[in-house]
Amino acid sequence: MATLTVELGERSYPIYIQADLLSLPDVLTTHLVTPKVIIVTNEVVAPLYFELVNQALSGYDVSKIVIPDGEQHKNLQSFEMIISRLLEMSAARDTTLIALGGGVVGDLTGFVAASFQRGMPFIQIPTTLLSQVDSSVGGKTAVNHPLGKNMIGAFYQPKAVLIDTNSLASLPKREFAAGMAEVIKYGVIYDCDFFRWLEENLQAIKQQDLTALQYMISRCCEIKAEIVAIDERESGLRAILNLGHTFGHAIEAEQGYGNWLHGEAVATGIVLASAVATKKNWLETSEFSRIESLLQAFDLPTVAPSNMAYDDFVRHMRHDKKVQAGQLFFVIPKKIGEAVVTDQVSDEILLAILS
Image 1 (cartoon, rainbow, N blue to C red):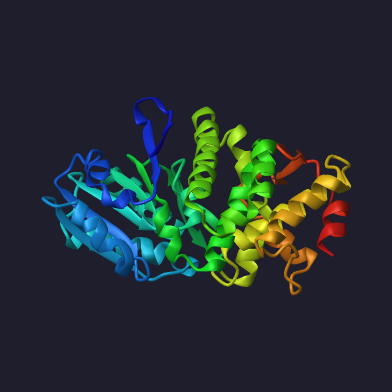
Image 2: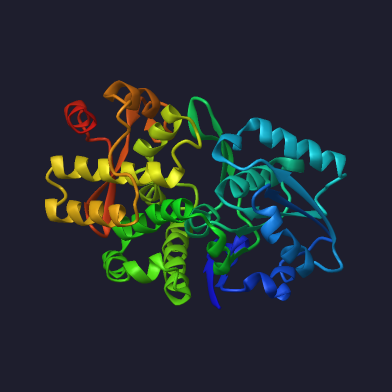
């Protein structure tokens, strides 16, 4: 088992990574300090993994809330529905929420946990690659609004993150590929050796070799834990984790949440951000080609939707969280393994790459 720690003082918590982890009940129950547990999951994940988790919770008062599947349901309506169910179940601070599912389930459950009675404990059990390497770690919880993604939420840390790599076997190929966009992002922004490892282990990853997957997920979580420990609330370094997201969120909002998967939009956003970097002579064209090629190797889109023009991007990006004092900030790679946040991107450069 790989075990990492997100170092946040008294709010520190472990991340466990192993195949068959959900069959080891002690790992989960160690972090339960309440007699009552409510598992929040979705209609796709519940038939696959709810009973396995329920068995691990023998002796606890266990209930579940099942929400529809899809990014389009990560909204205030779903948030209110979960809150209403908690009230009907007489949930209180003596109740632990468990998020069992992908990023939508994790973000919603975390935001509910942060809000209900001003805070209740929750545990993340992510079942998609994207949620395992990114959204389950770091305490960012949120819902979407028609005018912007993740604009309503809170920083709220889980008690633990349990990652069972076996859950990836049931993941559709498109979802697995979408998760790889976030994996590749870590190499681009922080670790050139990891990026090279991804290039060299492409086939093992595609075949979901368990040894390769455990190392890959562990390294991503390790990088994110290091960054979050330094900058929990995204006042500085943590912003580099948003590489590709300013462009990607615009694509998701314009195309309709769920039509482009989050990872697909981020993949295209990474290429667009890298194109900005080459225009500014910050990124070598050879490194741009390596970034684009690795994303394409996992069948990820690298070209913006044909029905999106410059004005469409700018309209959505103006609602991005990285807008400060009316100025839009971008995460831009300077080389593979290093990225910066800058507001020095001219309209001329944006127009050139978005046309």
